[in-house]
Length: 303
Ligand code: IVH
Image: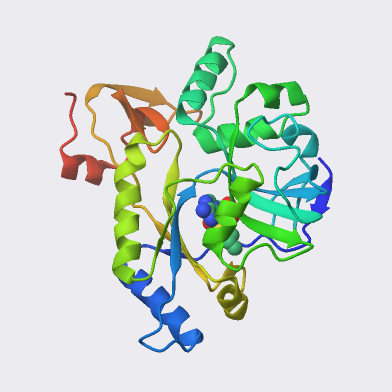
């Protein structure tokens, strides 16, 4: 894969975990913009898709280049592979500007991931740990026919370089991206208050187990593009956005047996055989029991 220098760097996001982090974020943003208490600031809350980000470059409405994020400044040229992904438009609809770079997340649905792993197992091939790795592995194929078969999906959520301004807000951008032919996540909402942000976090969190794809949090973005520009970025992340992460997923299962595994050096490790359970996008069927304190504390036994 050749290298692609991004026309605009692809940033990462700052993370928040608790209500206090969200209060700090909104307070900091409002202070930076010198907003008075009477002035509302709109935010968009959208699911944080657990996939890999791509930059798609269109010229005169035609897809001319697709690149991975890489280190944020330089990614890999995956144009030939992306041209075979049905979910990504090759020709835009509507009235896009001459140069339009669209960014978003490439991902694989959970059912396609499970079917792919079954197929990998039947063929005696290596299994993918989760849908994200399966999507990454499916994209980085020398044989683009394999990429085409994998049913990869894409949600658009931001812009790179553009030759003209499209709309003044993020909310309108999501609608504009739909108009150009992209799929935009329909769980996104607009709100003005901290309580509104937390409500959207809880609402999206409740749908999480039933969604066809993996998400690992909710991204809050200040809506107005002029506010985004004023806020700018600090280090590698914008000041105008925050990823509110979900706690690691938990699940309960039963120990069906305990085997002793013999390592290469002769070290013995007990391994719990579990009733297979799906958690965080992976099927867990074994767990090493090397941590004696924890085993005692949790009183882990067969059954
Ligand atoms: S916005 C400047 N929105 O999360 C803002 N990112 O942890 C750039 N991601 O590299 C990102 N869902 O790959 C944004 N709705 C979403 C997202 C999202 C997933 C990923 C993206 C980014 C990473 C940062």
